[in-house]
Length: 242
Ligand code: NDP
Image 1 (cartoon, rainbow, N blue to C red):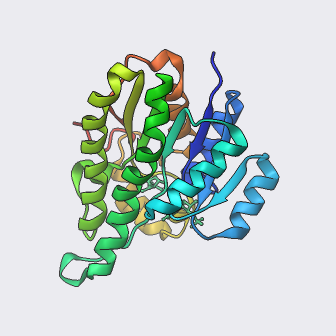
Image 2: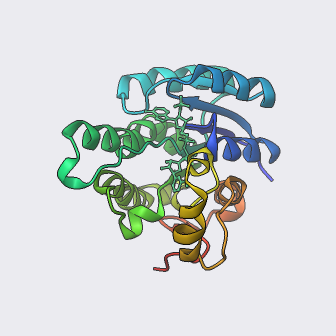
Image 3: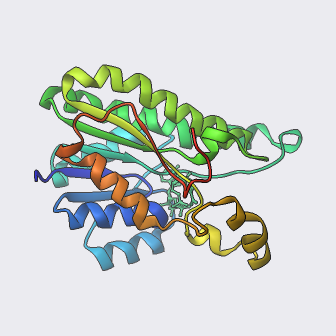
């Protein structure tokens, strides 16, 4: 197995933290980014020994500067996991232009910004893995998430288009669409809503674990996955089948 330099955006908590740990356990040199929660980032780095870097993925110049810093510390980035994402839910008639823009800027333009900066290096070295964390809600839509579903569906289109450009340069580009995952966000959902509304929608009868998404990532990042590109890997317990 080849070990690589991997960067996970939004890797200090939730799914991203599980991805970063799993990539490290595979022997890769890993760094993570985050947006503003310094306490979480410090605790994560102290516990795991994985360096965390703060910048906003929706800011192109910040991505250029941040990636230069990561590469100075770890070396050229071979594996980019675009995981950072936010929600700003509201029914469409109450959705503000700011709620729309923030989600598109982070969850969709963030992929352009990050990938565009590492792409020339991956092309030059003839190897790269770009793994985009989309969502089941980008596949099927979701009430009060016109912004989020649009961005996450955009991530899938981005993945498919870019995979065609990367193929001859040894770069694979894939998307993962998690369903309901047992993260901090989920723990705020009332028990009744969980048992009566959410779980009955999931044929396997439980939420997914962040580590299950992380295993999808470690596979797609591996040399074994070199023939897989432009694909969308659904990990949703059978909740939505395409
Ligand atoms: P969390 O909210 O737990 O963590 C989000 C991470 O992204 C944090 O590290 C956060 O940093 C970082 N982040 C947010 N905005 C930015 C930004 N503008 N620039 C840089 N970093 C940023 O997220 P989840 O683990 O729940 O979700 C991870 C991904 O998986 C997201 O893309 C989400 O849409 C997707 N997903 C999640 C599902 C779920 O059930 N949880 C289901 C389907 C998809 P900070 O801590 O500083 O805020």
